[in-house]
Image (cartoon, rainbow, N blue to C red):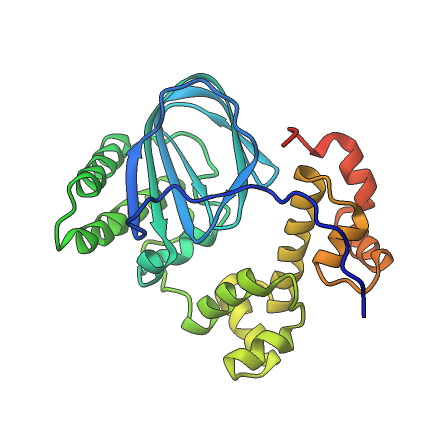
Length: 283
């Protein structure tokens, strides 16, 4: 049995929802600033800007900040802003439970959503939807959650049209795949075999791989490996944890096994990745 290694600072996790956990919509703070890398637990952050300049980095992918741009930060992702002009726009926080039953909820798991250029054809409609959701957030009524779900459906449909991320009639992910994603996000540090998750779902590993391949275009095993790699990159870039500590955190039996895994997927050793400037800010 391995001995526990000393604790080291984690990436900060923020929760900006306040007492109401399902959704919050507010205006973007009109301040030029650079934020430290941080994550959000259990909710999506959708940002629509009508003004601004600079850059926004989400899990090592940097995109420009500008008018009529849409940004999506998923639960657990690490992001930070480097703003050079005053931003204006909306920030919408949505719980995972609120969006789970939306037919287009699967789009919120895709990197392509929000990854293209400025909105071209539906900028006014999208801004109006955010304004309506903001009104429901400021003065909630008994049917506000139902209205917000409806507005979200329209919002995602418009974004699909803009970015051609997927057909508007795309079916939702199978429930077993959705549950697998949630289990993976909760347990990726200690469960890294398809069998572990299949057993929790009471299906075979082969069937779980088939479901993921059909719904997501890749296997459950590959999704597990990608999640572990993403977390390894975050910890190397944004914390002072040693390579040995990170290997321990991600349940590798030995740091050398972690090094082989990391190199096979990135072409670099963990130390090379860290030393080549991947860390953008001191926490």
